[in-house]
Image (cartoon, rainbow over all chains, first blue to last red; front, side, top):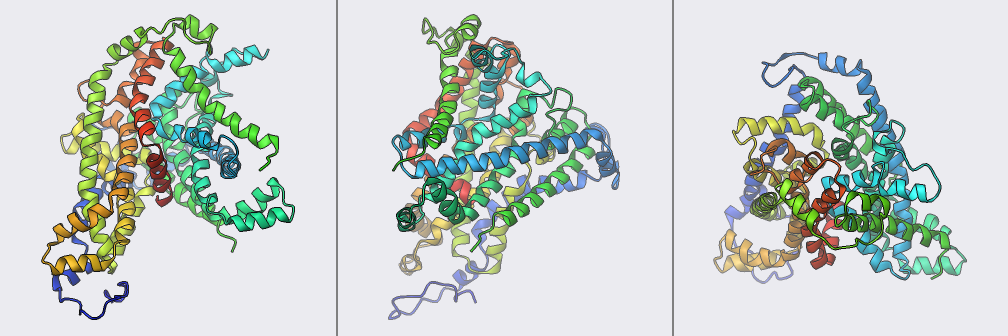
Length: 307
Length: 272
């Protein structure tokens, strides 16, 4: 069975040499072991530990943990702060993700049609993907402070320019969503453009001969062709918003004011490293893991290939 | 091709939203607070590097850069050392074991970073490497394994078996084949992995923050930078100078390897 999958040999004049150890090696990739063990210790190990700790009663590092059964999950599900976090994460994704995907798709479509300056555009669209969370956060910290550029522009336009965007309960979460969008649209657009680039030019020309305008071209031809790939990018950004954008929360708002920016990921951090309620923290971790799985399957169903 | 004005307006409007913050960042880094608030977009009156000196001094940015270079460099070397042989073995294996190993690696994309943070912190404490950059040098390659292995395996699969067989008939050992047949062909794949890992290792924040902690002799640039918020309060000029300082290496690499970096980011995301 191992040799059947080999590519066909063009030159059958010389018989393949007998190499027993190699046949064994084909079945068992021994050279992959060091990498696999490394990966298991540092990455799989902590995930397994998460599933164990979630069932422990462990109020702080210096205390001996006891068994809690489902107690942590009962605490989590009866805690209003947890439900605030669910709501904030849901808003962040339900508002951020569709806007990001639609705008990124339009941007990718624009770039792919090669208007003047598309090379400059492609260069800049990547930039947010290059810079670290602390650098992005500090930049927005200074842009959004009460004396920052955003308020300066608003004041110049004759609008209210005195808001403390990140310290105001009404605007803190929307500001964080804006940062997700600022960083995510460009990167998603470049990824989508890499797929749209390969759309058959003949189909496009034929549609244009038939009188299709740009709107028809974008939604009627490019979107359906790239649909499954848009699903892939959507999944990527979904996981990034759900799992990693809490770095902005940590750097900019610490979940506040109140619980207005406490997302699920941030709640895990806060319970582990601020409140020292380790069982609770890891129970939310399991919830988050499950939410990630469900979200991925949902996106795959919504954007699966139509053909 | 003609476009409705609205789409061009949207595209360039967004580009402007990307450029202006960086412009603001750079000009503010040469100004005092008053000047930043009253003339946010005006060029600075003098190109005074005083803010840079203060940022570098008060957040110990020089040792932090050194630590980042050490962590990024060693973690990169370790990643290649683990991933290249693994990809080599996986590309040649046709049995079930190989497929299971590959599937195990690709599960890594589903791990919630914030949730795995505390157990990783426990592991650091358990190994006695807590509050050292050593632990991060060991940890980062593990997080990069899924992507590195997937990308390199795909490259190695394109190598025809005949090449290998010819070499092994000449008496070459497995390692010789890896070095002289596979490595040269995989240079573009290795470059992709190096660029991707450089970005993610250099920019890594959360795990560095918790595991390396606040010691200026150990912490990386990404951990040192936000401390400016505390040490200099709301001196935005100094804050922006520190931010520009940490961005320079990444922009330098992007300027030099623009095409390769773009290709790396695209293939990294798509294969992930």
